[in-house]
Image (cartoon, rainbow, N blue to C red; front, side, top):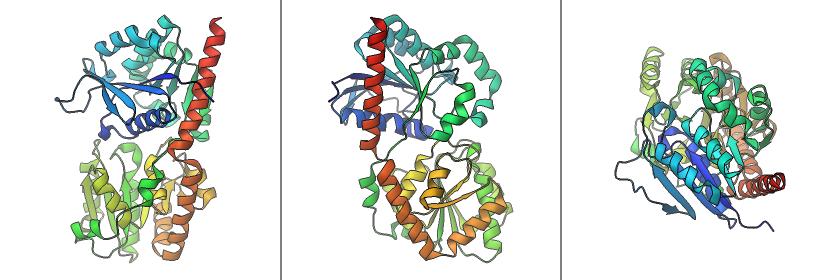
Length: 394
């Protein structure tokens, strides 16, 4: 039996449109709270309504505190958060820090040194070579100013797949790593609404099979590859619809123009960001989920699709690809339109094969990617880190 701990998570933003990190942070916080531990989350108010309460908000056993975002906003700077960390870190057993190259890394490392408290860094794919190289001059400046010292001071770096850990090793500065994946609420996906609701709202789709992309519309997601592959399938006679769902991070306009140029604009639907009440009907009506990313340290949308019983098509650069392939939950391809088109055509042409892949995906999620499993693994890690820190301070 692990003694109750007081855990603090720190993240730049909990705004849903920023993608996976907020969901991961809140999911982990709730999972560990359900195991009887006290959990608090510090975040800035980035992307959230101006009327949001600044005091603690209690949600599913987790106290959430928002601090004002200040200049320079690109670093998610918040001096009130830094002040709170300096005052209050001594009251926590451990701090779990999400992401790198942000103001919070400096603030957490500084506060933890002052109060002699351990902290864990969740890499969020940032040490993967593809992401590590992007905006290298800006990141290098942050590393020289504070990030390298903050990274070296961490007790451990958390990765979500073995592939992420291996790829990140050259940039981890010798800090030990541990793999704990993300989870989902599998029960929510086991009780999807009856098929037909999404199609009824979009009659232009008709009875066509739906190929679904669900996530941020970001350059790294390889949506252009998917569009070209889908267009190649339609030119070969496959009658399907492509649904691209998620918030725009700079590529929607170019993707719409590409769909027009490829002659598939009439078959392509952009929904924007969807809430759960809209996402679940879409998953119930979709036939194939596709994620052709250039870099993806996990891919929570892949796990959600598998939990919904969808076969998944992922690029070899999605770090869940080995699990998808070994588990028989879908197909893995190169990030190349021809390879994606071939795999997509095979899946769309085999309804029985899609059903079998979907069932294998459901089993894979149940075995590995649920929040109770993640909470248990986090609890063990936290207890080990706290015990090691206590022993080192004697």
